[in-house]
Length: 151
Image (cartoon, rainbow, N blue to C red; front, top):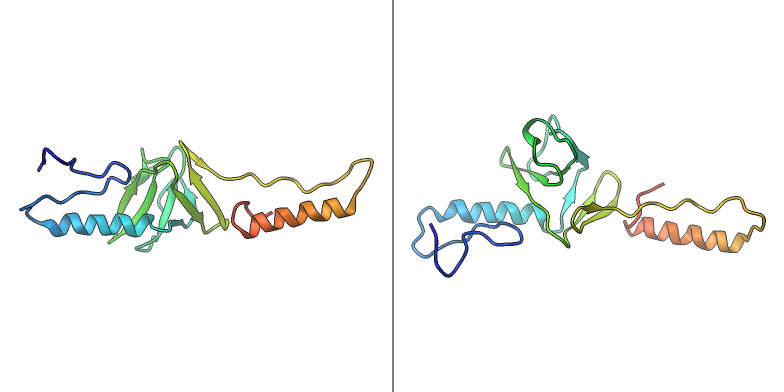
């Protein structure tokens, strides 16, 4: 059903929109609720290229490159398990997810980005123990904040 004033889906998260007098509204409302449940304060179990053997409802994964099986053609999307089915969500710029496997936050800006972990200082002709301790403390703080993956 179309309406001349509105699109049928929202532009950022592809949520279905209701129209006055629409039949079977519960299908649309349920899809909206399932999509919001998957992306609000988003967290993924990990990044995989094929579906896990025993996914639980409410769990989400980031679909890796060259995905296979039910996830074929869905690389880069979020695969959310809802009511025993896969719901795929296309990310948009600004989306953030917590990767539960690494404890690191990732964000989407044209592609999924994660901050690389810098090497701890070592070697050199002049060793400044205080500077190295400060650098290591910054790395530890960024890891605790979920910006860097654990080392």
